[in-house]
Amino acid sequence: MTTGVGAVEPQAVPLDTWAEALEGHRRIEALYADVAARRAWFRDMGTVSPGIPLPTGKQGLLDPDRVFCALAIKAATTKRAIATLCEAGDGENALALMRVLLENALLLEWFLGGTGRRRLETYVLFTSVLYEETVSTMDLMLRQKPHLAADFQSQMASDPYHKAITASVFQDRDETWAFFPDPNKPGQLNQVGIKRIFKDVTEVEAEESVDYRCFYKLLGSQAIHSGPFSLSRFLAAVTSRDTFMLDAIRSEKAETLALALSNASMLMALDALNAYAYLGLEDKLATIKDWMRRHDKVEAGP
Image 1 (tube, rainbow, N blue to C red):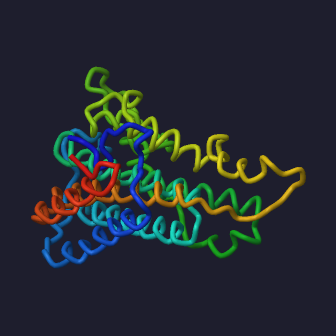
Image 2 (image 1 turned 90 degrees about the vertical axis):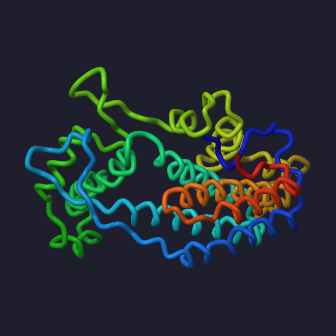
């Protein structure tokens, strides 16, 4: 399995023009209507798959199809936001959202693997942890900032089911949803991090993957966390100055880069949605990928 971004040399990413990146974006968005037109029905809510350590006597119903669809909608929404930022001349912040979209697309692709729907169901079950964390946070807010928390005081209370799921499935850990039973150590959990997800999806060690090293880590993470690498274009604006200045800096290169990379990530998300919901959009996706391979320096999928 390969990502929609593809393995390309960093110095070749991307030399396509803004017009070509924008045309790729429009072709991708034009495909969204076909998803609804295929009328792929959501399945009924179902019980949790075997192998997930549910608490005794607690067998709730999950709705993974709608969660998967919602994650795909989030990807499309982030994609639109990236294009909007790029068109407004804010390519640097668009690069931060590009990493968000890439991680979103990776999750969709990763959920297709593993045993049954265990990965996706574990993701859904983490909402119980988030519920209890929200209750705890509101309680803290009520004590520290009562003027902000007054409206929430009577709206949420700890729930026995959510507490039981939090304890049994996640062993009361709230830092990530990606905990799974260790097959070699009964009663212990293994945490799956982003490097493992990259490896599972791309079949390449993360540190040997351009997708991870360049797009996710060097470009995306630096942009999100305001790392030194993200300042290069802003530093260029003051290198020849002797005094402080403040203005918004536009970079056509950053805008084209962010939009082109978002095109590749969104195609990966569409590939995953197509496979999950049996939409039959392979030919239309292949047509877009072929067009992008001929016009973009960023590869458009496997």
